[in-house]
Amino acid sequence: MTSTPPRWAVRAAHLCALVTLPTGLWRLLLATGHQAGYTDAGYAAMDFSGWGAGYVIGLSLISEVVALLALGLVRPWGEVVPGWVPLLGGRPLPRLAVVVPAALGALVLTVLWTPLVAWWALPHSDLTARGSLVVGLLYLPLVAWGPLLAAVTVSYDRRRRRSAAGIITA
Image 1 (tube, rainbow, N blue to C red):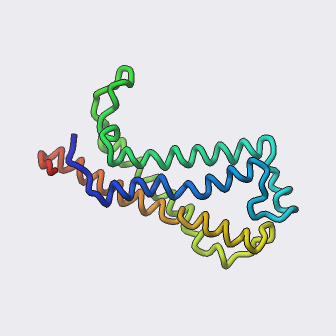
Image 2: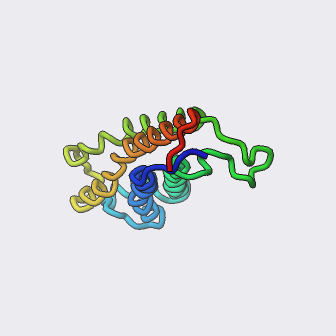
Image 3: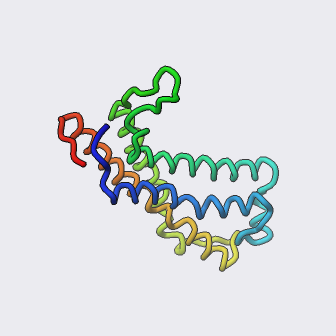
């Protein structure tokens, strides 16, 4: 196992998991029949019933699971496969098998969510005025997800490289 991750990296990894919660909870409201800021026409047009509800619930769950994977960059299970995994348990994970997907994820998340900074400059006729404000505030934390993941990924990579070079710090 490598050195202990810096406190800031542990906090950043936890923030990765937390920044997805506001939008996930908002989507769950939509799936349960609450307009959650939409106008009557806007809510009807989005069709959050049946498959639409399943889609937003699934999107919320997948987003949170993906965000929770950032914790692997600061926990032992991100370095060594847990012992309970058949055939692979106890084996070290190759550094690049973790760093490359995490770095690509950070890049995709940054490209995907950075435009939300301009949320209030765009018209949202399917949302009420209050709904537009609330939705903007709920989605704004996602702008930080990519940069947070990138920082934690760099920290993970540095720790794993130092460990491979025989430089282990507490």
